[in-house]
Length: 112
Length: 254
Figure 1 (cartoon, rainbow over the protein chains, first blue to last red):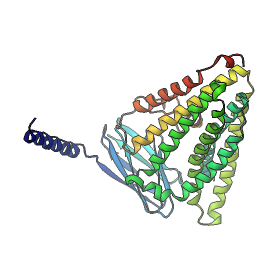
Figure 2 (figure 1 turned 180 degrees about the vertical axis):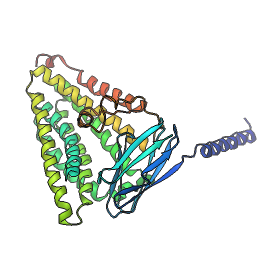
Figure 3 (figure 1 turned 30 degrees about the vertical axis):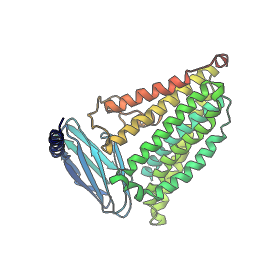
Figure 4 (figure 1 turned 135 degrees about the vertical axis):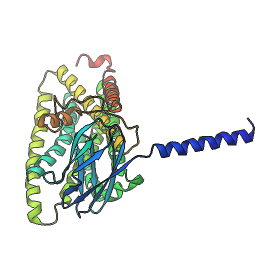
C-alpha cells in the first residue's frame, strides 16, 4: 500500500469514527434535588435507549439516588453533581428514591 | 428513625453475612478466626477514610470515581474469596484462609460502613436531628448482628461434611453476587455495553421486599439482571466452587 492510499484509509476511518460518535450521542436528562425532594418527580425517557442522568444536589447534605427497578445507586454530595447511565429499558414505570430521605425524595422514570 | 433503622440494618447485614460465613468457615476448617476481627477494625478505619474523601472520590475520572471504587473493592473481595476457597481445599494452602478472610472482611466492612458514615454525616447538623438516626442505627445494627449471628450458628451446628459444603457454596454465592454488583456499577458508569435486563423476576420476589433484601444480601439476588451480570455471576460462582473442589485425598476423611 502506498503512503497516499494509507492516508486516505486513515481519514476514512477517522470520518467514520466521528460520524459514529455523533449518531450515537447519548441523550441527557437533568434531575434536581432541593429540600430532599426530586424535581421533576416524573421523568420520561425513550424506550430501548441508553440515557445519561445528570443529578444536581442543591441541598447542603448528601443524598443517594437509588432504584431497585433501575438497579442504580449513587451518592450525590451536598452542592454537588453526579452522572449515571440508565437503560436500555423496556417500556414501564421505574420508581427511584433518595435513600437518605426515602419518605420525601421520590420519583419515577417513565419509559415510553 | 425507622428509615435510619432500615438503611443501617441493610448495610450491617451485607457486611455481617460475609463475616459470619468466613468465621464459620474458619471454625469448620479449624483455622483461627482472629484475622476476621483484624479485618473488621481495618475496614472501619478504611470506611471513615472513604467517607471523608467521598467528594474527591466522586469527581475522579470524569465523575465515575464512586463506581470505580466499588468495582475495585468488589473485585478484591472476589479474588480473596477465591484464594480462601482454594485454601479450604488443600492443607498445603490452608494458610491462605486467614489473611484472605481478613482482607475480604476489611473490604466488605469498608464498603458498607462508608455508606453508613456518609448517611450519618448528613444528619450531624444538630443533636435533635441526629438522635433518631443514632437510635435507629443502634437498633438496626443490633438486628443485623443478630441475623448474622443466627447464620453463623446455623452453619456451624451441622454435621462436618455438610457444614463444609454449605459454607463453601454460600461463600461462592457471596462472591458471585459481588461480581454481578460490580458489573452493575460498570454499566452505571457506561464502562460496559449497556444491555436490557434479561428477565424480570420481581413478580415472584420483589427486590424491595424483606425477603428480596435478605436474598440480595445473601446470594446477590437481582430481579432484573442483564446478560453480563448473569454471566459474571455464573462464572465467578463456578470459579470459586471449582477452586474449593480441588480437594486433596487427605481432606476426604475430615
